Amino acid sequence: MKWLATLFFLFLPCAALASPDLGTYQDIEDVRVYRDHQKKGIWYLTPALPAIAKGGDQAPDYGLDIYRYLGRKGTGDQALFWVKGVLSVGIVRDRDPKVPGRIRKVLKAKGVASPRLRSMPVAGAHVRLLFADQSQTWTQGSRWGAERLVLPLDGRMAEVLWDAVHAGQTLVSFAVEERLTGLRWVDGQWQEAETFASWTLPIELDIKTYPEKFRRTDLGGRMARGYTGLDVFCFDFLEELDDNLYAKIVEEAISTAGRALVEEITFKENSDFRTRIEFKLAKDLDQPYRVRITRILKDGRREVGEWSEKRGETMLDVTAYREPEEQSGDEAQAPE
Image 1: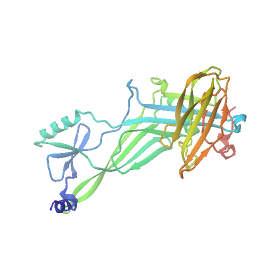
Image 2 (image 1 turned 180 degrees about the horizontal axis):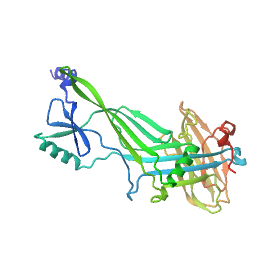
Image 3 (image 1 turned 90 degrees about the vertical axis):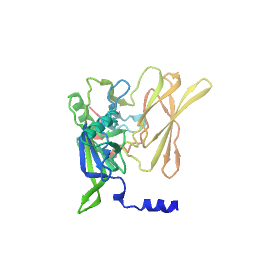
Image 4 (image 1 turned 30 degrees about the horizontal axis):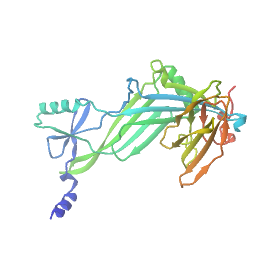
């Protein structure tokens, strides 16, 4: 008969199960806690506030990269010029491990004999990273956790943010709105209900203290010294240039005595737009290296490109840009 008991439990009405009473709460240690609708000793903690992640050196985990590209006759895009920006921010949601103990102590002082703490049920989250009129927004049907956020910026926004950073202004913010579920006592009975918890986090971009986190890079620039590595950029996914593209495989080959050394990297939708290849041997920039690009489409097809030669470039951009005539007037003009 165990299966009957299991079925009976599964079909119990919502009010018979443990659930927060959205009408009864306390604000303790900057945390809102809701009491259970039946068991007065059970309290539910709302999710922890978001904060900027920190690296091993305790520096904030953010970065602003500005990229400029000027087309060249040899690559067939001589009329093309653009500026793009990428703002990246690491977010964490860690609660001080001492906070739950302090909350329990306060609840005891308020007359709760043996308070027990649980996590508040979350039905969904709405997350936004905002800058001026640019934003990256997404939703998910559960509690939102920590992650690294990447916001692409067009040329105008990239330059505005770069100037704002140098002026010491903060124009970037991060916002989370979560839908919390529970019960409310209405007309003499418990009814399913929900409430919202919202947080806004300003992002202080401090170039004076952390200048290494702000970079301006000219892609396709030439150098005259030997190198052991190659920085590779791919903006196809960040700029959503091709809806059918699943992955882009980039192969780089340098000639050595007797054979060629080949290194391979893969870009996908959720991968970093920038990566570095370290060759096992030093390479003289007077000698060319070869590049081959393979496109993997979402329907499984592979489009293998031809090998092409590059010479003297330590920053390789493999983005499949649209034709120059499709660019707007400001983007299609080279700088004076």
